[in-house]
Image (cartoon, rainbow, N blue to C red; front, side, top):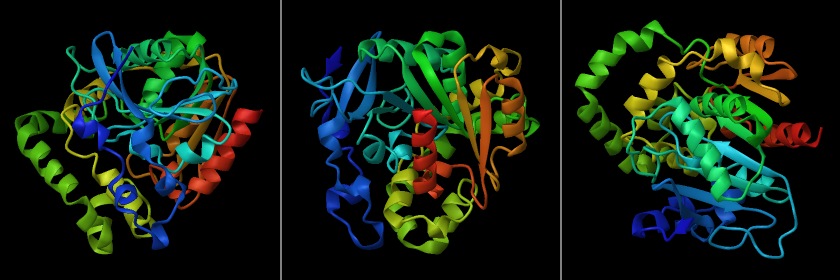
Length: 325
C-alpha cells in the first residue's frame, strides 16, 4: 500500500542535488531528481520512506505496467545511516536492475515504530515491505547493522533472499561487545543530549563537509580517509545523524546473537570489508566466511567501514560481477 509523502519527505532529495552543485562532486547521483523516486509505503501501519528506480519502475515509485522483468536489489543502511548511504550505487545499478533503498523505522525520514526496535523485527518488516512492493525475492545488500538485518532476513525468510552481500556487517564481535555494554548506561542517561548534538551536526553538515578538517573529525571513525570523500557525498551522510532509533538499534544489535544460525543461510553470499575498518574488525569477515556456506570474502585495502562510499567504482563492479554469477 502506498501513501503520499509529507512535505519533509517529498523534499528529502539530497541537498547538493537540489542545489545543482558541480565541480569535483559531480557524480551520477547528482543527476537524479530523487523526489521522483521517493514515496511512503505503509507496512502493517508503519510508514516507511522508500526510494526505488530502475527497469520496471514508474516515476513516483511502483511497478510500471509494461516494465520488463529485472533482478531486484534491496539496499539496507547501517546504524545512524539512511537510504543516502547508497547514493553511489542506486543510479549505477539501476541501469540494469530494479533497485530499492529504504529508511529503516527510526532513521532517515521513517518515523519510530510502535514496537521496540530489534533486528528480528527489522527483518520481518523487510519481508512485509517486499510483499507490499510485489518482490518475491531479491539480492539483499546491507552495511553494518544493515548487513546484520540482511543475514537475519536470509535465515528467517530464506525465500526472500536470492543473494546476500554483507558489507562490514555487525553480528559477530558486536554481540556483547564490552565497549558497548559499558557505554549503554551513560548513553541512555545522555540520550537527549546526544540526539540534540547529532542533530546539530546534521543541520551543519554542509559546513562540516566543505571544511576538510571538520570532515575529518566528523567521519574519521567510519571512513579511512574522510578528506578524499567528495564534500557533497560526505554532507549527505552526516545529514542522517541524530535520529531517534539509534540507541534502541544499538542495544538490539549488541544483545542479539546470530553466530550459531549463520550456517542456515542457503543463498550465495559475498562478504565485503575494509582493511582499515575502525568500527568492526576485519577479523569478523573471516568468521562470516567460515560460518556461512557458499560464501567468499573480499577485503579492500586502505578502506574503512563504508566500502560502497569509499571505493564506489570497485564496489559496484564487484557487486555486478557477483550478481551475474
